Amino acid sequence: MTRVLAKGLAPYAPWPVTRHAAASLRKTAREHRVGSNHTISAALVMTAFSVEAFIQTVGPEVLPDTWIAGDKPVERWRALDKLKAIGKATEIAVDYGSLPWSNIKELFQARGPARARQTG
Image (cartoon, rainbow, N blue to C red; front, side):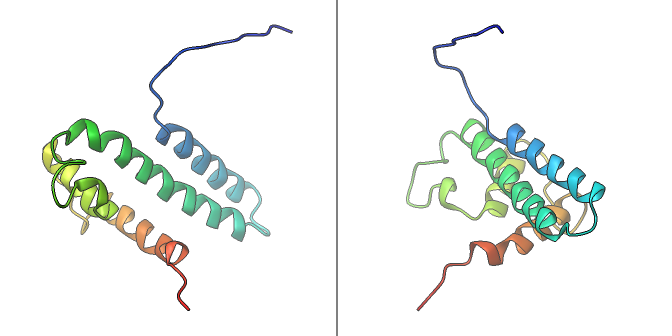
């Protein structure tokens, strides 16, 4: 067995890892239909995490002047609004009324109850 020790700093973007995890969960759910409700739910949440991770990774690069600066930094906006700002900055039309953007909007709507804060 070969052992490797690596030290140092390297850039890390979590979204490819979370996207792969979501794809793996979706594949598992397709292969094992019976009892796959929890796997499908996990895939849904992991897909939302991967979109958010993408936004958090790309956002500071694309919007360096407004991401954390000002009274209302982009970093604190809702995910869909952040994605729209990233699209505008990169000249990519983000239209939540058409594919694939409508899927992302539905994804965040489905994930919403999982993130709701409890009151009481």
